[in-house]
Image (cartoon, rainbow over all chains, first blue to last red; front, side):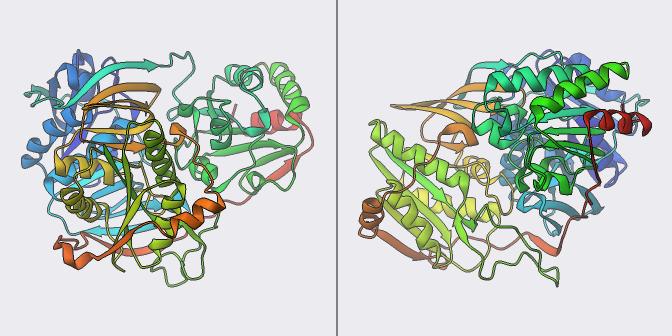
Length: 314
Length: 248
C-alpha cells in the first residue's frame, strides 16, 4: 500500500499539520510520499523531504497551484492517484476545498476529518459537531481521507527523501484567481499555538474584543480565538472562530473569556490540555469542561489576571 | 437565471445529540428536525439574488424522507419559487447525494447552484465540491460574498487566515459559509403562500442513480467525557495554579 500526503504550506514554509498527517499516513503504510503543490515552494519541498519516514517528495509548480485553486490541485492529484492506494490531506480550508473533488473523480467516498486510524480501511471521525464519534469502514479500492491534524503527533525531522519534480497538471479551468487578503499577524497560528485566548459575545463590541483579548494574548504569547457568537456579531474575524464550523484547536492552555460554552464551541476546543474559563454566569456550560473556572465579570477579572501574570514574571 | 438550492433536513442545531445505547447511531426518534443552518443561508442568498434581479427563479431541492417536504416548505416560505423532493428513506453519503443532484441538474439546467458548505449531522463538507467535480463545473466554496452577473460570478471565500476572491464562469457551484448573510424568518403570510407553491415529489429509484453506500458504520460512540475541574476565587489563583502545574 502506498500513501500520498498533501503538504500544507504557504509557499514559503511547511506547516506542522503536514508532519501530523504524515504520522496518520505511517499508520497505514511505510510507503509515504508527500506532494508539495505551490509556486516558488522549493524550500517547502526541501523541508518535506526532511520529515522522518517520508519515501519521496513530489513537487509541482504553477501559478494556480500557488494560489490554492481547488480545481488546479484536484486535476494534479487525481491522475497521480493511479500510483497510490490512499490520499491523506490535512483538513485545512484548502484541503476541504479540493479533496472531495479528487474523491468524486475517483468515484470513491471521502472519509472526512479522521481523528484515529484503526486499520487500513477503518477510521474514526467526529459527527454532529463532535458530539458523537463514528467508526467507519470503507469498501472503496482507494481511500481519500482528510485528517484532523491536531489529533496526531507530529512526525519527527531527520528524513532525507529525494525530491522529484512532477508536471503541474492542466490548471484551474473556468476559475480565475482575483485577489487574496491574508491577515498578517505576529501572533502564532491558531491551530498550531501552544496557548489560545478566546473571547465571546460578552465582549459586546469589536473594540472591546481588541482591548481585552489581544493584550492578554500578547502577554501569554498566545493566538487569539473567538466563539461563533462573537464572530456572528462581528466582534472578531471569521478565521478566529473556534468550533464546529470554525477551527478545531488542542493547545496546552485554552483561556475562554466571556464564552458560555455552546456545544458548537466546545466541539472546537475540548481536546485542549488545560482549559481556563472566566464567565460571570456560574451556570455557563463552559465550567463543565474547564479545569480552572472563575465566576467573575471579565471587566474586573482581566486587569487582575494581567497584574497577576506581570507579578509572575510574564 | 435559474438558481438551484439543495437543502437538507437535519436535527435542529439547538438539540443535544444523544448516541443510541446500542451504538448503531444517533437517536433521532421524537427529536426536533429543521433545515440545516448552512442550507438556510444558501436559500437566503438565492432569494436575495432574485430580489436584486440577478436570478429569475429559485428552485429548492431536497433528498430525503416524506417529512423533508416540511423543509422544502420552509424554503418556499423564505422565497423559493418551487420545490422538488427526491424521496427516499435511505441515508445517502455525500457522493450519492452529488450524483442525485447531478441528475436533477441535467433536467433543470440551472445557471448556478447555491448550497450550504456542510450539513451539521455528517459534518462532511464535501457534497458541493463533489457535485462540481462530477459536472466539471467550477466551484467557489465557503462564500462570504457572491456577485452574480451574466456568465460569471465573483465570489469572496473564507480561507485560513483571510479571504480570497475568485471569479468562476457560470454555471458553477457556490457553497455558503456562515457570514454570507443572516437568513430571514418567514412571515406568516409567506408561510401561508408557501403552501400553494408547487412541490414535486419524485422517487429516488426513478432517477436510476447508483447510491450504494461505500462506507459501513461500525459503531457510533460518545466522545470521552471531560470532567469539570475546580472553581477558583480570583485571577491570581488562576496564575498561581497554572504556574504550579508548569502550564505557563
